[in-house]
Image 1 (cartoon, rainbow, N blue to C red):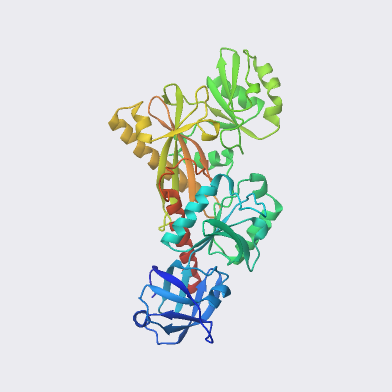
Image 2: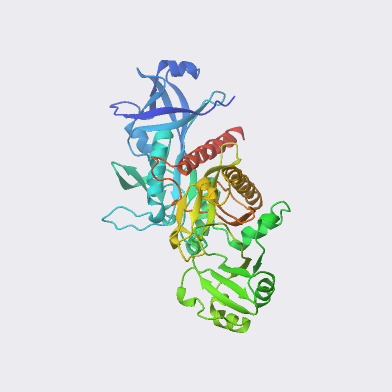
Length: 460
């Protein structure tokens, strides 16, 4: 029988003239685990397994004392920890963790601390959360990972410290750059991680076209998707004949950048842009003028052309909703948080990067619907987002643990899935909380992956 996970304190102890491969526990804990004093068991921390001798010590049952020399054998900084622990009574093995590694690209001056860019404060929250709930968290770059060790940054005394660290139980991918993620170095790293059998989640960005294709093959989701096609001259003619407003979006775009809004007025067209406002048309254009004027934009990158939706607004500022979802320990998707995003004035995208603001969803919905309808719509947002995440994770390879779903609501109250992000921004949640909900959800998911993986190895 494999026991469930419990949480224990691990404290360093300085030993002299003693076997460094020892761990000090209470006699009551040894009795609970049905072990004799000085029994030798395999102790796994991260990817390292060492046989250690269990020795009785006058401490409480929730604390284990570890010699400083043994910490060093596991490449762990010598400090106090809370760890999740699972003791297997049949195999007489002890698994401790999780060791969580976040993979990202960052700025680092040798004379200063690293800058993890847009997720810097989120990294600090994850570190605080892991210390509180159990485990060890660090951040590393792709170039600093090898099959035997990792050079990364862990948090100590209010600063990020560089050190050789243990291989992780789980890797959370927050690489900022699509180009880097698709490069040969990252492909080699992914192969190494796969060979080491380390769970690695949210391993890549999705394109807008890819997400649309996955979801549009599900009949029950199709009504919630704006009509979308890959951009060609022919598809643009078709879509502008069909809809009074269409959007052209780069399939690999993010943060609301480089989006064109094309509005048809009889046989003429107006163009507005989310960024690069010099591209905005100053007069009505014919279709040939439209295509010729924006041909460079159309051809330099893959784009989609998408049906425009008349979304609800807040004093003429467009509203949409970001629903952040995570997988739980039962491998099911659940909603972690929802925010309404209000576009800046004279702007048609609601992204914070383009001047948007956030608001509580029911408050934003109550501006357009009755209180009862607002509550019902808020529940539907979560329901639709969870279903979309479930479908997307069924169709894609690799492990998904976190997704941000952008949903709009039109003036008839109909919901529309606008986009799904595998690297959702961390700028939407309530930062007044010590540890925001998404950080807690990530920690729970990593713990689940770490111990699920070790269970499979023990059962094989």
